[in-house]
Length: 367
Image (cartoon, rainbow, N blue to C red; front, top):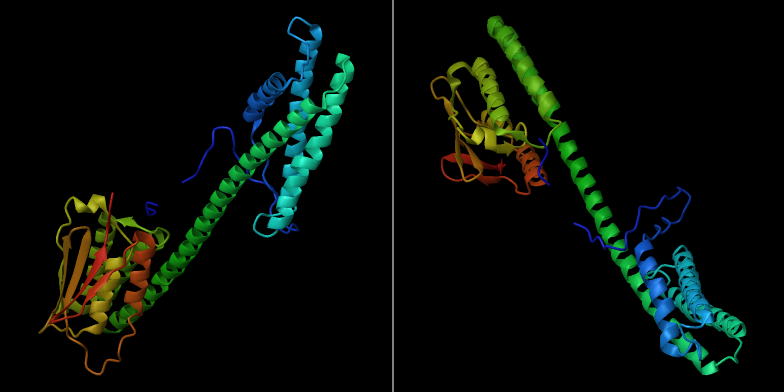
């Protein structure tokens, strides 16, 4: 079972993922989904500005030319909007706010002023020619100024939404990258488990073949069941405690076959925790293996290993009996387990090495 693991969605604006070729310096900007905003605002500007600026002159609604002029005003609005929109999207392919801020601003000013102004003047002169009265340059200047202000505002809105979406895209990309990196690290750690476990078991099997062939056969059969679980579990970040507990008991049987009466394993019933708690696979087995590896044990002096549960944590404890002439441990097994727990659960293990007992606290996820 995998570990249990945010975006602005404007009503009128949405950026779709852009296709980018491998030979491009950077991905092409995604097309804007702004159909509804254009459908609403283009006619609104085309109707409001002419009626508020004296565009119609002496013409009123009773005159057919008034309605032609109204349609012409909407066409002016449409032309100005889409012309600036085209230049806005065009310059996005070449200039970036962070890499070329001066060129970016220059391109926006050029599109907003030097393209909008000539277009409005020419279309206004065409309207006056059709309407049959002299051009009113005061009205032309007023309409031009109003359109430039509106274009500047709309461009600002476009770019603000674009930067927000770009920022969100960057955050998502970073999160995906971090998640991929974390997953790769976790997979690398899990890949170390099976070979290490198998190596130790083969050593044990070799010892049993030489000393007790009957136990060797039983060990081999039990080992097949245990290793089947390893092959399945290592593909998952977390497993239910119920599965890990069943495996731990099977592993305990392997230890008892190998060491006879040299170990005392206290494995209480986890009760309801078995179905609710989740832990990294093979985490408890790793601690059992470490206890046997680093401590003395014999039939006369069995090594006691105990397990208990408290507050989403599993405590594995054993008596401290360091082997004579044993080389200092590098603690790689505990470090790997700690890293696996941090990657899968966000919390590492805790180690207590005081007094007569050695205790490791393994976190669990409750679902």
